[in-house]
Image (cartoon, rainbow, N blue to C red; front, side, top):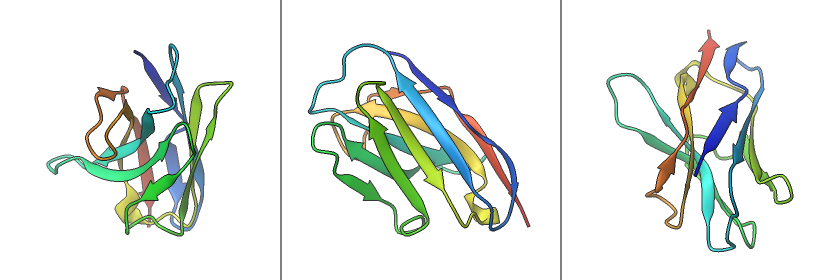
Length: 117
C-alpha cells in the first residue's frame, strides 16, 4: 500500500490550502482514509477521516467547520480542503489508511503545512 500526499506549503493566516492523497491498489468499502498531523515534539493528532464506502466524514473539533475532507473513488484519492488556516495548524500532515477511524494501518510520507501569522 502506498499513499502519495501532496499540496503542502506556506500560507498566511486566513488563507487556504488543499492537500491530496492518492492511494495505490484496491480500496475496499470498509476502508477508512484521512489525515493526521504532527508538530515536532508532540504526538500525532487526528484531523479528519472518511469511510470509503459510504462517505461519512469525521473531524477533530479543532478543524471542524474549517476543513473539508472529500474522496474521489475512481481516482483512489482523498482531498483535504483547509480554509481559514491558523498558525496552530502548522504541522506535518500525514495521509492515512486503515479500517479503524482513529488507528490507521498505513501512513504516507507527510507533507508540511506552514501557516504564518
